[in-house]
Image (tube, rainbow, N blue to C red; front, side, top):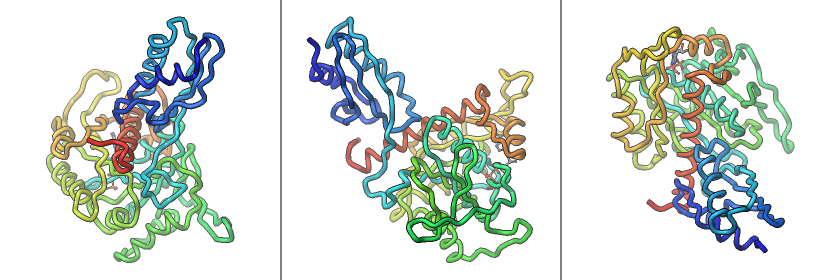
Length: 358
Ligand SMILES: Nc1ncnc2c1ncn2[C@@H]1O[C@H](COP(=O)(O)OP(=O)(O)OP(=O)(O)O)[C@@H](O)[C@H]1O
């Protein structure tokens, strides 16, 4: 007769490739049930966007068949519980991810929005803060210009209710300012506005809260890096040398002593132009390989390369970001980037919690 102990012993041969420990030691296996040759259990991944899901599932099936019974009928419920740093002060927001660039106009907001949508499509609970005080573009990208968030009472306190669209909870500085009026932002004002978006809003439970930051390194970045337990930062660049040089400075700020925010990786946007009618033709109009060089210099992954495609800017302007579509080259690229970001967050959390030693 097969026992649950035998199943667990077999599964202790399955290694989580990123965390480099077996899935039983990592407490990723739950609800083991045995009924004759029918064996079922749950595997709890570190994120619903886990790129290793199929690999781990296959390894589990193989381990049970190899070590327990080759005729076993294995049923696995692949589920997830998103991890967080144990020092994270927010009990409801598991991971805050900043999206930053050195230069303006490289597609930072485009990446932040499509990344948020791609993570939500994988089943994660996602929030997005538009912290680009100088040019908040998220209201336009979600067709929410002029929208005003409601206030709600939470435990006797008045809180801002984020606006929900496409399954994402959103707050933008743009919801509280007049788009026709330029605001002379001073350091302390910036800092308190950003803090309010976090602390005075009713975010509920979130797996990932993405923050779109202004270009460069300024008060928003300092406030975030010093005041919040960031899970990491995603650096967006285009391939040109000028963009790369600025991206290097931007990324460098997060590496400074006293800041030390993990860089999750580099996204190269507008990597090449591809005509709709000839998708196999790639024209590297801004140069080739810059994002990869930057990622190598910082010893971080290149998370992906997004082509220059008209549908991306059309999606942004019309309030229907391209990642809402399914079988599209760009939305597939963003889906892949979302998996890689979630994977890097899980690795950084494991490192911070001393569950992973490198
Ligand atoms: N891969 C792409 N293909 C085509 N157009 C793109 C692509 N990425 C971004 N764009 C367009 O380029 C413009 C700038 O993008 P976006 O606003 O995302 O940049 P940003 O870096 O956030 O800018 P800012 O400096 O204002 O914060 C937008 O019109 C956007 O739709």
